[in-house]
Length: 356
Image (cartoon, rainbow, N blue to C red; front, side, top):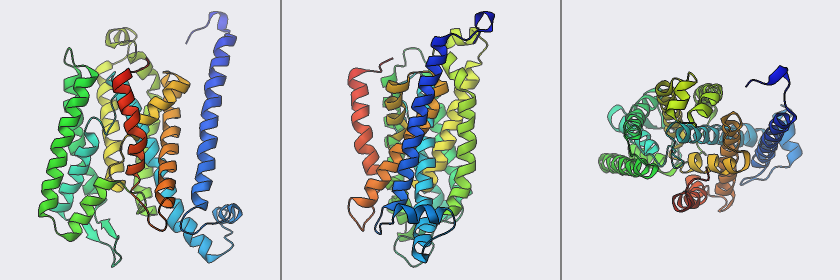
C-alpha cells in the first residue's frame, strides 16, 4: 500500500490496531481453553498441577501420565485440525468466490475418507495395535495420506472445472459437492460391506471423526505439514485480497489468478486429506469458522486467515471438551458437536446469502 509523503494515515493505524487486538483476543481465548482442556476429563486436575506438569515438574506420576500421554496430544491435534480445516475453508471460499465452500460441503472430506478406506482394504493399512477395544491404528500413514490426497485432489479439480464455467453459482458448486460426497459415501459403504472386523473398525473411525486416538507420532507427521501450509496461506493473503476484486482486476495488478486458484485448492485439499487420514471427517469447521470471524474482523485476508485459524482451533477445542465431558466416562465423536454448530450456519447462509 502506498501513502503520500510516506506518512501512514491515523485511520489506517487505527484499523491495524483494531484487527490486531481482535486477533490477540482470539489467541488469548484459545490459550485459556487450552489450559481448561488439559484440566478437565474423566479425572479432573487442578490448574497448578497442569502448569507444573507442562514445566516438567509434575506433582505426581498420575498427572504426568494424564497430561503428557492423554490430554496434551488430544488438545494439540484439536488445535492443528481445527486451524487447518478453518484455513482451508477460508481459502476455498476466496479462490472459488463461493461463501458456501468448505472441505465438507464440496465433498472433499468424503473423497479423502474414501481414499483412506480404500487404502485400508487394498493395502492393509488398518491394523489392530493392541488387544484394547479401540486400538485400531494406521500401519502406514504415508500410504493412507497419499491415497486420501489423490481422491481429494480429483474432487477439487472437478470443483475448479465447474467453478470456471459461466453461470456456475455457489449453489451449483455446493450441489456438485453434495453429489460427489454422496458418491464417495456410497463407495465407502460398499468397502465397509466387504471389510473384516479390523478394517471395518478403521473405516468407521473416519466416518465419525474422533480426536481421542491421537498420539505424539501422529502429531509429528501432521504438525510440520499443517504449519507449512498455514504459512503458505498467510503469505498468499494479499493475492486472495486481490482476487476478491474479480479475476480481470486481479490480473490487471499482476496476480496469476489461475495459479493462485489452483495452488490454493491443492494446498487446501492436501491439508484436508492429511487431517482426515488421522482424525476422520470433522464436519463444518471449515465453513463455520471463517464466516463467524468474517462478521467480526471483515474480509481482509491478512487478518481473516489468522482469525479463521484461531477460531477453528477454538471451535474444535470446545467441541472436543464437550465430547469428553457430556457423557463421562465415555468420549463421543467430536464431529457430532461441530455439526450441531455448523449446520445452522450453513442453513443461514443458504437462506440469507453471504453478507458481502
